[in-house]
Image 1 (tube, rainbow, N blue to C red):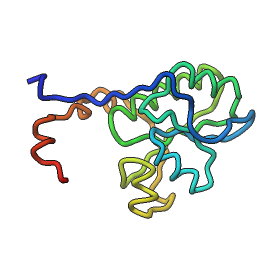
Image 2: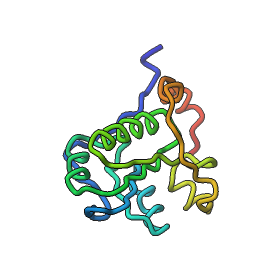
Image 3: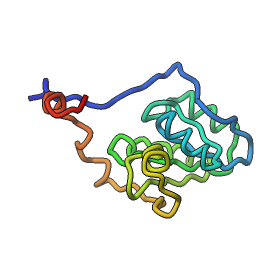
Length: 152
């Protein structure tokens, strides 16, 4: 039943990027959430976040106009993260900016990887996002089941 499913989708189009200034020639990182950004900054990385799973046109414009050398994308390990990362990688490539997508092999995102699990860079791998990864419906949640099973 479609009424019992909740699809993840947060977008804050008027919100600026959070994080470090982007300068010409920089190697920078992009991630989904503010805690992910803090985790990467704690690791010494120059990082920004839109505080949502996807960048909007203004965010892309702001990054591209500042001409970073490389954009590294730390993706969440879910369909929304992979789709957004693939889109970002294509947009940066079309604008002559090298980009790479990375993910944790043991955690959902950067915050869980570094902060909650205390892991290091050894289990962070560069990934290539495939059509099989982004054409799944794993991001649809049975909301009533979630309510029954959630922990308070």
